Image (cartoon, rainbow, N blue to C red; front, side, top):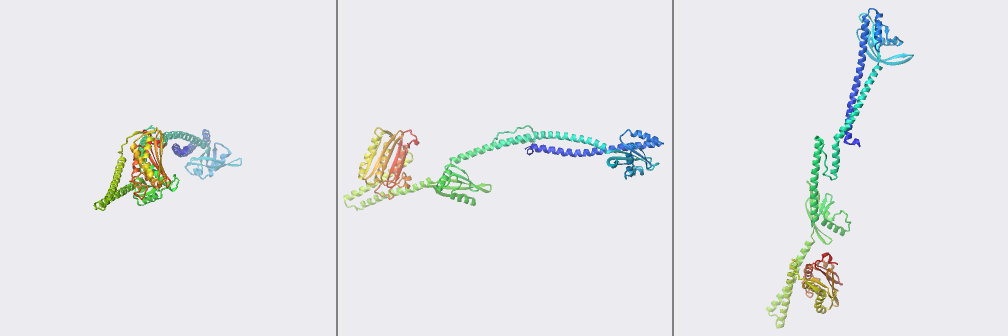
Amino acid sequence: MLWRSVVGKLWFTILLLVSVVLTILMVLLLQSFERFHVNEAESQLVNHANMIAAIFDGYDEQDDALRTISQYGSSFETHALIFVEGTKVWGTNNSANDDIYAQLFMTNPVLNEVFNGEQVVATEGDFPLSDNGEASHTEMMVVGVPLQPTELDNSAVFLYQSLSAIEETSNETKQIVYFSAGIAIVLTTIFAFFLSSRITAPLRKMRQVALEVAQGQFKTKVPILTHDEIGQLAMAFNRMGRELNRNIHALNQEKEQLSRILVSMADGVITLDRKGQVIVTNPPAERFMQSWFYEQGINEDSSVLPEAVEQLFQRVVSVEKEQMIEIDVQGRSWAILMTPLYDREYVRGAVAVIRDMTEERRHDKLRKDFIANVSHELRTPVSMLQGYSEAIIDDIAGSEEDKKEFAKIIYDESLRMGRLVNELLDLARMEAGHIELHLEELELGAFSDRIVRKFQGYAKDEGVTLTLDHVEDGYTNSFDPDRIEQVLTNLIHNAIRHTGEKGRVTVKVRSNEYGVKFDVIDTGSGIPEEDLPYVFERFYKADKARTRARGGTGLGLAIAKNIVDAHKGQISVHSKIDEGTTFSFFIPEAGTEKDELSR
């Protein structure tokens, strides 16, 4: 609306100010003109009265004087009465009203003073008259001048005039004043609107530009039309827009940089406000929250924090120091370090860094297990070597056959230690990436037959049926035959060893355009579900008792996995307790992408 705008307010203020000033001036002028007209009329009446008194004094004969006064009185529009010694001797109208006026003038206390001496009197009032028996009132101005006060008593000249004539003159003056005031108001209105519009035009432009700046259009500028305060304001506004644009650009760059840093971080980051509401998260933190939501059965859109994290936040806010906890969610270990955020002297929230410690904990466990396993694997053969060597030295073995048996045991245990050391060295070289592959184009059928025939005797001794389900002759693939044979040897040997009598072990070979897939399927005891993630770790053994009857160093599957990885393949295991186990590995053709391995 116009009245709510700067133009309307400025326009209304100027118009109101001018109107008040004009009203005051108009009232003063009207009063001044009214007094002027009254004084002018009174002055004229006094002059005429003095002239009549002078004419009356200038004649010796009263009749001559009255004739001259009659001629003089006809030249102006006033009424006159002459009293000589208390008696009216002449009047301009010579009507019945003259007698009434004469009686009124004689009895009026103000006008009556003119008969007492040399004093000119003047008065204005409402004089009642009777016209045809009806009473009326007339506003008149009356002036009295004494006649020959030293010679005649109660003699005076009265001139009277109706105030309607003066009112007509005053009304004409009022009309002129009102008309002038109206013109002044109209001109003021036009001028005020023009002035306010011109003054506020840059302000309205600034308002429009400010709205555009609020919408993010920081390059919009206010035109500078003048060099006054408004022009300086426009310059300051444009400078502010440039600074805002620069600061917003810098903030956006910092925000984008921070966002990139958060996204690229391996650790999760959660920023909380004073009330514990989540403000910012990055993908690792979102994965942690999703795992917790899944474990608790909570909707993922919920803003509820894990209870441990909530308690950690309360401690951080209360003590205003960083705190750390470690929790387990969905089988993974998470370390959470939370630090308070300050707004000057007050804590305004907290930031939590969430690190997945699962691999570190697993590596710690594997390192401890590795030491324990190596110690266990070496302790038995070393003890046997030491014991049987002492028996030979102390001549406990009395016969040559006993000595040969002890020497045979010492030899077998030394071979066992040698295999363990060699496998450890091979595994270390493979994990360090120093494995060398000698690729050859081999016919799969012949290669598979040779491997299976090698284990037929061992399988028969164990009472296990070993069969081969291979591709038709003619299919070839490129791989290192010695390394793949090492993998198959380990898998087939493990399958026969963990399959009871009358069990079955099947080696299945399938080839396609992407590579070759080997499956070793047994009907043995199976692997517990909780052990499946660790079967390819070093020193893993399905037999927890580690009996020597089952033998093995526990490094075969770890070596097999490294060989398959060196071929850019994949190896996996599926098992059910008392139903059997299936080990599968895929060797791709050279140049095949990894996402094609599962086809």
